[in-house]
Image 1 (cartoon, rainbow, N blue to C red):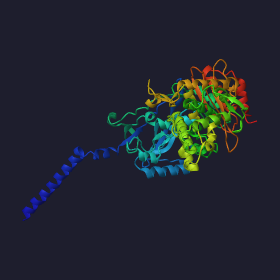
Image 2 (cartoon, rainbow, N blue to C red):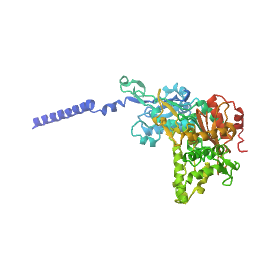
Image 3 (cartoon, helix red, strand yellow):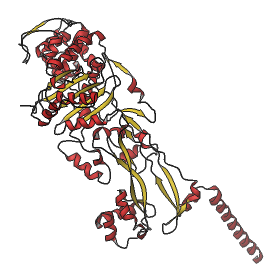
Image 4 (cartoon, helix red, strand yellow):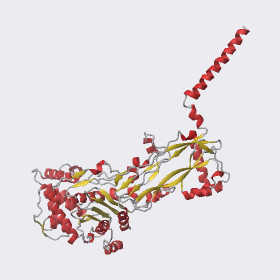
Amino acid sequence: MGENRKYIIQFVFILVGFIYCIKLFDIQFLDETYGPAAEDNILRKDRDYSYRGIIYDRNGELLVHNDPVFDLMVVPKEAKVKDTVKFCKLLGITEEEFVEKMKSAIDFDTYQPSVFQKMLSIEDFGRFQIFLMDYPGFYPQVRSMRGYSHNSLANALGYVGEISKRRLDKDTTGTYKQGDYTGISGMELEYEKELKGKNGVKYKMVNVRGVVKGSFKNGRRDSISVPGVNLKSTIDLELQQYGEWLFEGLAGGAVALEPKTGEVLSIISSPSYSPGFLSGRLFSKNYSELVLDSLKPLYNRAIMSVYPPGSTFKPLQALIALQEGVITPKEQIFCSGALVGDHAPPGYYDIYKGIKKSSNNYFYIVFKRIINQNLSDNTFIDSRLGLEKWSNYLYKFGLGKPLGIDIPNEKGGQVPSPALYNRIYGKDRWKWSTINSISIGQGEILISPLQMANYIAAIANRGYYITPHIIKEIGENGKPKEKYLEKHYVGIDTANFTPVIDALESVINSGTGLRAQIPGIRVCGKTGTSQNPHGEDHSVFVAFAPRDDPKIAIAVYVQNAGQGARAAASIAGLMMERYLTKETKKVWVEDYLKKGHFIY
């Protein structure tokens, strides 16, 4: 019996040893989860952050570049700070902030690195670096922040910031990690996919004190970061800076386009801010200041503000009337001045004189002919059918909906439709006399500066537009997105543009647009005053030049600046002159503009 027990015990020991051998073999050669776990005890995984793509203007001038910065990382288990006061002084933080940051790092993971101090500049890190060996557990990680060599175009460029938890949760591709930076607004957001690039990883061997001993397996497990794609924008930086200077002290927006291509030459929102204000360590503080600013500098007025266009809308009314055949170019219509208040005197008007003199009574009559074409014996139904025709023309011109510019948050404005008036007055309980204020660009019609620039560009092109866009080339020798190459026809016969363009030229030569004249260049334009129930009226102006080979189309809105012939026409004329001639001869207009006495 004793002999049998000895064999049983030996068998059990052999069996247990055999099981351990099998398990050890499985751990070392078959199960892939234990190897990395062991490696994590001696490895440090550093993110190799990619550089975002660079953005240039149309002439190759740098708009956005990358500046190197350093994140100070900490591994709480290894961190040792003997002199907290000196440490905090070197980093420019308080002892309370030190305690809070260490607590956050410990809460994240005691053994894994996390960011202790974000975005130290080269200068700030340089002061700290010589003492780095005194602080085990701390090490730098290189990344970049956006840099700017100018103070312009902030609203269009947008800004980059740390990815939010909401966006991180939506990222099903695993592209982003906590602490990554991403485009939040403007071009930076719209072209995030192209600009971002791809982050890499570098594995380093460290000892128990966290001191780097070299790369792991000669870097065979490392992945190299891939920089983002560079973009060439349509913006003319010199024109942009000049336009922003003209807008100093004023509120409003302006957009200048190249009519034949839809390329945005300048896009101005005023007041604005310097793009560098939202880059770097002070992002949160500076962003809060901008959000609380009553002047709303973060609000992109060029694409988000919508206003009644006023008399700048009259050329479009004339085109619709010509296309519908309810008037002819030379037809004389007597205007007694009794329909509505008017600065144009009573008398006979045709398209040329009606636009040049900006006759409200003439366009009241023209609009009535568009709306009431006797399509029904019932005047209410007749008005509805006429308004449906009219509103469809506006949609073809890109009004009443976002045009689709490659900047987020564009507003579409409002085109008055039968559905709108049915909601206001009841179904078929309104007619021309109820809605006639829209005949002169007032009432319920609302248009953004971008839409106005696009509308006048379509006139400059004699019947089509290309969706406005702000990126000219994606990558080296690239092109814009396909949708920014397509022509959109507005449904007006080419011949109908001639009498309207003749009238627009007369506005500049001998009408209210005198301040927009450019010596030696034929300019076409229209002034407007957008009524504002909350204060002084808005100054509005649209134009293009040269007449027969348009290189620039522009729309300018200046809030609370009165008549369009003053502030808006002055800014537009100066910007067109600067772009076409590369100089400013009309210094007297600059002087007038800077004095700011527009409403007196």
